[in-house]
Image (cartoon, rainbow, N blue to C red; front, top):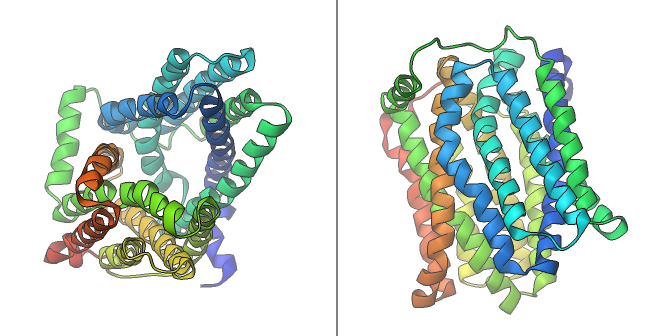
Length: 401
Protein backbone atom coordinates (compact mmCIF):
# COMPACT_ATOMS: atom_id res chain seq x y z
CA UNK A 1 0.00 0.00 0.00
CA UNK A 2 1.40 3.39 -1.01
CA UNK A 3 1.77 6.32 1.36
CA UNK A 4 -0.99 8.12 -0.53
CA UNK A 5 -3.37 5.22 0.08
CA UNK A 6 -2.29 4.95 3.74
CA UNK A 7 -3.23 8.59 4.31
CA UNK A 8 -6.53 8.12 2.49
CA UNK A 9 -8.75 8.68 5.57
CA UNK A 10 -7.48 12.27 5.84
CA UNK A 11 -9.13 12.97 2.48
CA UNK A 12 -12.52 12.17 3.97
CA UNK A 13 -13.85 15.49 5.42
CA UNK A 14 -15.67 13.97 8.39
CA UNK A 15 -12.66 11.95 9.53
CA UNK A 16 -10.37 14.96 9.05
CA UNK A 17 -12.61 17.03 11.32
CA UNK A 18 -12.63 14.27 13.94
CA UNK A 19 -8.86 13.76 13.58
CA UNK A 20 -8.19 17.48 14.15
CA UNK A 21 -10.45 17.48 17.21
CA UNK A 22 -8.58 14.60 18.82
CA UNK A 23 -5.20 16.09 17.88
CA UNK A 24 -6.01 19.44 19.47
CA UNK A 25 -7.39 17.96 22.69
CA UNK A 26 -4.47 15.50 22.97
CA UNK A 27 -1.95 18.34 22.69
CA UNK A 28 -3.51 20.11 25.64
CA UNK A 29 -3.85 16.92 27.67
CA UNK A 30 -0.17 15.97 27.39
CA UNK A 31 0.88 19.50 28.29
CA UNK A 32 -1.42 19.57 31.32
CA UNK A 33 -0.26 16.16 32.63
CA UNK A 34 3.31 17.42 32.89
CA UNK A 35 2.19 20.72 34.42
CA UNK A 36 -0.13 19.22 37.02
CA UNK A 37 2.44 16.61 38.05
CA UNK A 38 5.18 19.15 38.70
CA UNK A 39 2.87 21.67 40.34
CA UNK A 40 1.47 19.17 42.85
CA UNK A 41 4.82 17.51 43.54
CA UNK A 42 6.40 20.90 44.22
CA UNK A 43 3.70 22.07 46.60
CA UNK A 44 2.24 18.94 48.22
CA UNK A 45 4.41 15.92 47.38
CA UNK A 46 3.83 12.51 45.76
CA UNK A 47 1.05 11.35 48.11
CA UNK A 48 -1.12 14.28 47.06
CA UNK A 49 -0.45 13.56 43.41
CA UNK A 50 -1.46 9.93 43.94
CA UNK A 51 -4.76 11.04 45.48
CA UNK A 52 -5.54 13.31 42.53
CA UNK A 53 -4.72 10.62 39.97
CA UNK A 54 -6.82 8.09 41.89
CA UNK A 55 -9.73 10.54 41.89
CA UNK A 56 -9.49 10.65 38.11
CA UNK A 57 -9.45 6.84 37.76
CA UNK A 58 -12.32 5.95 40.11
CA UNK A 59 -15.12 7.64 38.09
CA UNK A 60 -13.68 6.17 34.90
CA UNK A 61 -14.14 2.70 36.42
CA UNK A 62 -17.56 3.60 37.85
CA UNK A 63 -19.12 5.16 34.75
CA UNK A 64 -17.49 3.65 31.66
CA UNK A 65 -20.16 0.93 31.25
CA UNK A 66 -22.87 3.56 31.61
CA UNK A 67 -20.94 5.66 29.10
CA UNK A 68 -21.20 2.81 26.61
CA UNK A 69 -24.98 2.66 27.02
CA UNK A 70 -25.40 6.40 26.46
CA UNK A 71 -22.98 6.41 23.53
CA UNK A 72 -25.29 3.90 21.79
CA UNK A 73 -28.45 5.63 23.05
CA UNK A 74 -27.66 9.25 22.11
CA UNK A 75 -26.06 10.90 19.07
CA UNK A 76 -22.37 10.27 19.67
CA UNK A 77 -21.28 13.69 18.43
CA UNK A 78 -23.32 15.26 21.25
CA UNK A 79 -21.68 13.01 23.82
CA UNK A 80 -18.19 13.75 22.49
CA UNK A 81 -18.86 17.49 22.47
CA UNK A 82 -20.43 17.50 25.95
CA UNK A 83 -17.57 15.44 27.39
CA UNK A 84 -15.03 17.82 25.81
CA UNK A 85 -16.80 20.89 27.20
CA UNK A 86 -17.07 19.29 30.64
CA UNK A 87 -13.35 18.42 30.61
CA UNK A 88 -12.58 21.96 29.47
CA UNK A 89 -14.57 23.41 32.36
CA UNK A 90 -12.82 21.18 34.92
CA UNK A 91 -9.40 22.09 33.56
CA UNK A 92 -10.31 25.81 33.61
CA UNK A 93 -11.14 25.54 37.32
CA UNK A 94 -7.93 23.59 38.00
CA UNK A 95 -5.97 26.25 36.09
CA UNK A 96 -7.51 28.99 38.21
CA UNK A 97 -6.60 27.06 41.40
CA UNK A 98 -2.95 26.76 40.35
CA UNK A 99 -2.66 30.34 39.10
CA UNK A 100 -4.11 31.62 42.38
CA UNK A 101 -1.32 29.85 44.29
CA UNK A 102 -1.36 27.41 47.25
CA UNK A 103 -3.24 24.70 45.31
CA UNK A 104 -5.99 22.95 47.23
CA UNK A 105 -5.68 19.18 46.89
CA UNK A 106 -9.38 18.82 47.69
CA UNK A 107 -10.45 21.16 44.88
CA UNK A 108 -7.98 19.66 42.42
CA UNK A 109 -9.33 16.21 43.33
CA UNK A 110 -12.88 17.39 42.57
CA UNK A 111 -11.67 18.60 39.18
CA UNK A 112 -10.04 15.20 38.61
CA UNK A 113 -13.35 13.45 39.41
CA UNK A 114 -15.14 15.58 36.81
CA UNK A 115 -12.39 14.97 34.28
CA UNK A 116 -12.46 11.20 34.82
CA UNK A 117 -16.25 11.12 34.57
CA UNK A 118 -16.12 12.94 31.23
CA UNK A 119 -13.51 10.50 29.96
CA UNK A 120 -15.75 7.56 30.91
CA UNK A 121 -18.39 8.80 28.48
CA UNK A 122 -15.97 9.97 25.80
CA UNK A 123 -14.03 6.71 25.35
CA UNK A 124 -16.90 4.45 24.20
CA UNK A 125 -18.29 7.26 22.03
CA UNK A 126 -14.91 7.59 20.27
CA UNK A 127 -14.85 3.90 19.38
CA UNK A 128 -18.45 3.98 18.22
CA UNK A 129 -18.29 7.08 16.06
CA UNK A 130 -15.23 6.17 13.98
CA UNK A 131 -17.10 3.84 11.56
CA UNK A 132 -19.53 6.74 11.02
CA UNK A 133 -16.86 9.22 9.93
CA UNK A 134 -14.68 7.03 7.71
CA UNK A 135 -15.41 4.38 5.09
CA UNK A 136 -15.12 0.71 6.13
CA UNK A 137 -12.15 -0.01 3.85
CA UNK A 138 -10.22 2.83 5.52
CA UNK A 139 -10.92 1.85 9.14
CA UNK A 140 -7.56 0.28 9.93
CA UNK A 141 -5.70 3.21 8.39
CA UNK A 142 -7.90 5.60 10.38
CA UNK A 143 -7.11 3.79 13.66
CA UNK A 144 -3.40 3.78 12.78
CA UNK A 145 -3.46 7.52 12.00
CA UNK A 146 -5.13 8.22 15.33
CA UNK A 147 -2.39 6.18 17.04
CA UNK A 148 0.35 8.09 15.22
CA UNK A 149 -1.45 11.32 16.07
CA UNK A 150 -1.26 10.47 19.76
CA UNK A 151 2.43 9.58 19.63
CA UNK A 152 3.49 12.72 17.74
CA UNK A 153 1.25 15.00 19.75
CA UNK A 154 2.47 13.30 22.94
CA UNK A 155 6.04 14.33 22.19
CA UNK A 156 5.05 17.87 21.19
CA UNK A 157 2.55 18.30 24.02
CA UNK A 158 5.01 17.15 26.67
CA UNK A 159 7.61 19.60 25.35
CA UNK A 160 5.01 22.38 25.29
CA UNK A 161 3.99 21.61 28.86
CA UNK A 162 7.60 21.86 30.00
CA UNK A 163 7.97 25.18 28.17
CA UNK A 164 4.83 26.62 29.73
CA UNK A 165 5.90 25.52 33.21
CA UNK A 166 9.28 27.23 32.96
CA UNK A 167 8.01 30.37 31.22
CA UNK A 168 4.60 31.36 32.65
CA UNK A 169 3.65 28.63 35.12
CA UNK A 170 1.78 25.34 35.43
CA UNK A 171 -1.63 26.94 35.74
CA UNK A 172 -1.42 28.38 32.25
CA UNK A 173 -0.66 24.94 30.82
CA UNK A 174 -3.97 23.73 32.29
CA UNK A 175 -5.67 26.82 30.88
CA UNK A 176 -4.30 25.88 27.46
CA UNK A 177 -5.68 22.36 27.94
CA UNK A 178 -9.08 23.83 28.80
CA UNK A 179 -9.06 25.84 25.58
CA UNK A 180 -8.12 22.80 23.47
CA UNK A 181 -11.05 20.84 24.90
CA UNK A 182 -13.43 23.64 23.99
CA UNK A 183 -12.10 23.87 20.42
CA UNK A 184 -12.30 20.08 20.06
CA UNK A 185 -15.85 20.13 21.40
CA UNK A 186 -16.96 22.53 18.67
CA UNK A 187 -15.27 20.38 16.02
CA UNK A 188 -17.13 17.32 17.31
CA UNK A 189 -20.38 19.26 17.47
CA UNK A 190 -19.95 20.21 13.82
CA UNK A 191 -20.17 16.57 12.72
CA UNK A 192 -23.50 15.92 10.95
CA UNK A 193 -26.29 14.98 13.34
CA UNK A 194 -27.41 12.05 11.22
CA UNK A 195 -24.25 10.04 11.84
CA UNK A 196 -25.02 8.32 15.11
CA UNK A 197 -27.61 5.68 15.79
CA UNK A 198 -30.12 6.05 18.62
CA UNK A 199 -31.11 2.70 20.08
CA UNK A 200 -34.56 3.79 21.23
CA UNK A 201 -36.46 4.67 24.39
CA UNK A 202 -35.89 1.45 26.30
CA UNK A 203 -34.54 1.53 29.85
CA UNK A 204 -30.85 2.10 30.46
CA UNK A 205 -30.69 -1.18 32.36
CA UNK A 206 -32.20 -3.14 29.48
CA UNK A 207 -29.78 -1.61 27.02
CA UNK A 208 -26.89 -2.41 29.37
CA UNK A 209 -28.00 -6.06 29.46
CA UNK A 210 -28.23 -6.10 25.67
CA UNK A 211 -24.66 -4.82 25.50
CA UNK A 212 -23.53 -7.56 27.89
CA UNK A 213 -25.33 -10.15 25.74
CA UNK A 214 -23.43 -8.86 22.68
CA UNK A 215 -20.18 -9.48 24.55
CA UNK A 216 -21.15 -12.83 26.09
CA UNK A 217 -22.41 -14.27 22.82
CA UNK A 218 -19.09 -13.66 21.05
CA UNK A 219 -16.28 -15.85 22.35
CA UNK A 220 -13.67 -13.80 20.54
CA UNK A 221 -14.77 -10.63 22.36
CA UNK A 222 -14.81 -11.90 25.93
CA UNK A 223 -11.61 -13.92 25.58
CA UNK A 224 -9.81 -10.84 24.30
CA UNK A 225 -11.20 -8.70 27.15
CA UNK A 226 -9.90 -11.25 29.70
CA UNK A 227 -6.56 -11.21 27.89
CA UNK A 228 -6.38 -7.42 28.13
CA UNK A 229 -7.26 -7.56 31.83
CA UNK A 230 -4.44 -10.01 32.56
CA UNK A 231 -2.07 -7.82 30.59
CA UNK A 232 -3.11 -4.67 32.44
CA UNK A 233 -2.74 -6.20 35.88
CA UNK A 234 0.75 -7.51 35.07
CA UNK A 235 2.58 -5.46 32.47
CA UNK A 236 2.20 -1.79 33.29
CA UNK A 237 2.70 -2.05 37.07
CA UNK A 238 5.77 -4.27 36.53
CA UNK A 239 7.18 -1.88 33.95
CA UNK A 240 6.33 1.55 35.36
CA UNK A 241 7.02 0.76 39.03
CA UNK A 242 9.47 -2.12 39.44
CA UNK A 243 11.36 -1.91 36.15
CA UNK A 244 11.74 1.82 36.66
CA UNK A 245 13.23 1.17 40.11
CA UNK A 246 15.53 -1.57 38.76
CA UNK A 247 16.74 0.88 36.12
CA UNK A 248 17.29 3.54 38.76
CA UNK A 249 19.34 1.22 40.97
CA UNK A 250 21.33 -0.87 38.51
CA UNK A 251 21.04 0.25 34.89
CA UNK A 252 21.97 3.92 34.82
CA UNK A 253 19.51 5.89 36.92
CA UNK A 254 17.03 8.54 35.83
CA UNK A 255 18.72 9.28 32.51
CA UNK A 256 18.53 5.60 31.54
CA UNK A 257 14.83 5.49 32.38
CA UNK A 258 14.24 8.65 30.35
CA UNK A 259 15.86 6.86 27.41
CA UNK A 260 13.48 3.92 27.90
CA UNK A 261 10.48 6.30 27.85
CA UNK A 262 11.82 7.94 24.68
CA UNK A 263 12.18 4.50 23.11
CA UNK A 264 8.51 3.87 23.88
CA UNK A 265 7.50 6.97 21.95
CA UNK A 266 9.73 6.01 19.02
CA UNK A 267 8.37 2.47 18.94
CA UNK A 268 4.78 3.67 19.15
CA UNK A 269 5.29 6.01 16.21
CA UNK A 270 6.98 3.30 14.10
CA UNK A 271 4.22 0.84 14.95
CA UNK A 272 1.50 3.33 14.00
CA UNK A 273 3.15 3.87 10.61
CA UNK A 274 3.44 0.10 10.10
CA UNK A 275 -0.23 -0.33 11.03
CA UNK A 276 -1.11 1.88 8.05
CA UNK A 277 0.21 -0.81 5.71
CA UNK A 278 -0.12 -4.26 7.28
CA UNK A 279 -3.18 -6.41 6.61
CA UNK A 280 -4.17 -9.77 8.10
CA UNK A 281 -7.18 -11.93 7.29
CA UNK A 282 -7.14 -13.36 10.82
CA UNK A 283 -6.38 -10.20 12.81
CA UNK A 284 -6.85 -11.53 16.35
CA UNK A 285 -4.01 -14.02 15.99
CA UNK A 286 -1.69 -11.15 15.14
CA UNK A 287 -3.23 -8.78 17.68
CA UNK A 288 -1.85 -11.13 20.33
CA UNK A 289 1.37 -12.27 18.70
CA UNK A 290 2.67 -8.76 17.97
CA UNK A 291 2.76 -7.94 21.70
CA UNK A 292 4.88 -11.01 22.50
CA UNK A 293 8.02 -8.77 22.85
CA UNK A 294 6.48 -7.20 25.96
CA UNK A 295 7.07 -10.41 27.92
CA UNK A 296 10.70 -10.57 26.73
CA UNK A 297 11.10 -6.91 27.68
CA UNK A 298 10.01 -7.65 31.25
CA UNK A 299 12.36 -10.62 31.44
CA UNK A 300 15.13 -8.28 30.34
CA UNK A 301 14.48 -6.05 33.34
CA UNK A 302 14.14 -9.06 35.65
CA UNK A 303 17.59 -10.33 34.62
CA UNK A 304 19.06 -6.82 34.33
CA UNK A 305 20.07 -7.13 30.71
CA UNK A 306 22.21 -4.28 29.27
CA UNK A 307 20.43 -1.00 28.67
CA UNK A 308 21.05 -1.15 24.92
CA UNK A 309 19.14 -4.46 24.67
CA UNK A 310 16.30 -3.13 26.82
CA UNK A 311 15.98 -0.08 24.56
CA UNK A 312 15.62 -2.33 21.50
CA UNK A 313 13.09 -4.55 23.29
CA UNK A 314 11.10 -1.49 24.38
CA UNK A 315 10.91 -0.26 20.80
CA UNK A 316 9.68 -3.67 19.58
CA UNK A 317 7.19 -3.86 22.47
CA UNK A 318 5.59 -0.52 21.64
CA UNK A 319 5.62 -1.28 17.91
CA UNK A 320 3.49 -4.30 18.84
CA UNK A 321 1.16 -2.16 20.96
CA UNK A 322 0.48 0.20 18.09
CA UNK A 323 -0.15 -2.53 15.53
CA UNK A 324 -2.19 -4.69 17.90
CA UNK A 325 -4.31 -1.76 19.03
CA UNK A 326 -5.16 -0.78 15.46
CA UNK A 327 -6.03 -4.39 14.54
CA UNK A 328 -8.26 -4.85 17.60
CA UNK A 329 -10.15 -1.58 17.17
CA UNK A 330 -10.70 -2.25 13.48
CA UNK A 331 -11.98 -5.77 14.17
CA UNK A 332 -14.48 -4.48 16.72
CA UNK A 333 -15.65 -1.70 14.45
CA UNK A 334 -16.13 -4.02 11.47
CA UNK A 335 -17.79 -6.99 13.20
CA UNK A 336 -19.90 -5.47 15.99
CA UNK A 337 -23.23 -3.90 14.94
CA UNK A 338 -22.96 -0.11 14.94
CA UNK A 339 -25.91 0.29 17.29
CA UNK A 340 -24.10 -1.85 19.93
CA UNK A 341 -20.49 -0.86 19.30
CA UNK A 342 -20.07 1.65 22.11
CA UNK A 343 -21.56 -0.70 24.68
CA UNK A 344 -19.27 -3.54 23.63
CA UNK A 345 -16.25 -1.22 23.64
CA UNK A 346 -17.18 -0.02 27.14
CA UNK A 347 -16.74 -3.60 28.43
CA UNK A 348 -13.36 -3.62 26.69
CA UNK A 349 -12.48 -0.37 28.48
CA UNK A 350 -13.79 -1.72 31.79
CA UNK A 351 -11.62 -4.82 31.56
CA UNK A 352 -8.58 -2.58 31.33
CA UNK A 353 -9.39 0.29 33.70
CA UNK A 354 -10.39 -2.03 36.56
CA UNK A 355 -7.34 -4.29 36.45
CA UNK A 356 -4.76 -1.57 35.89
CA UNK A 357 -5.24 0.13 39.32
CA UNK A 358 -5.47 -3.33 40.92
CA UNK A 359 -2.07 -4.16 39.51
CA UNK A 360 -0.58 -0.96 40.87
CA UNK A 361 -2.09 -1.68 44.29
CA UNK A 362 -0.67 -5.23 44.42
CA UNK A 363 2.75 -4.75 42.87
CA UNK A 364 4.32 -3.15 45.93
CA UNK A 365 3.26 -5.74 48.55
CA UNK A 366 4.09 -8.65 46.22
CA UNK A 367 7.56 -7.30 45.44
CA UNK A 368 8.18 -6.76 49.15
CA UNK A 369 7.75 -10.52 49.63
CA UNK A 370 9.30 -11.89 46.43
CA UNK A 371 11.75 -9.15 45.53
CA UNK A 372 11.60 -6.83 42.53
CA UNK A 373 13.34 -9.02 39.98
CA UNK A 374 11.27 -12.14 40.74
CA UNK A 375 8.04 -10.15 40.69
CA UNK A 376 8.87 -8.72 37.27
CA UNK A 377 9.72 -12.24 36.06
CA UNK A 378 6.37 -13.62 37.25
CA UNK A 379 4.65 -10.64 35.62
CA UNK A 380 6.31 -11.62 32.33
CA UNK A 381 4.83 -15.11 32.68
CA UNK A 382 1.37 -13.67 33.38
CA UNK A 383 1.70 -11.49 30.28
CA UNK A 384 2.40 -14.66 28.26
CA UNK A 385 -0.71 -16.29 29.72
CA UNK A 386 -2.72 -13.23 28.66
CA UNK A 387 -1.27 -13.37 25.15
CA UNK A 388 -1.98 -17.05 24.52
CA UNK A 389 -5.26 -17.42 26.45
CA UNK A 390 -7.50 -16.17 23.60
CA UNK A 391 -5.46 -18.08 21.03
CA UNK A 392 -6.50 -21.32 22.75
CA UNK A 393 -9.98 -20.68 21.34
CA UNK A 394 -10.50 -21.83 17.75
CA UNK A 395 -13.33 -19.29 17.43
CA UNK A 396 -10.97 -16.44 18.28
CA UNK A 397 -8.23 -17.71 15.99
CA UNK A 398 -10.65 -18.03 13.07
CA UNK A 399 -12.17 -14.54 13.25
CA UNK A 400 -11.82 -12.93 9.82
CA UNK A 401 -12.36 -9.41 8.53
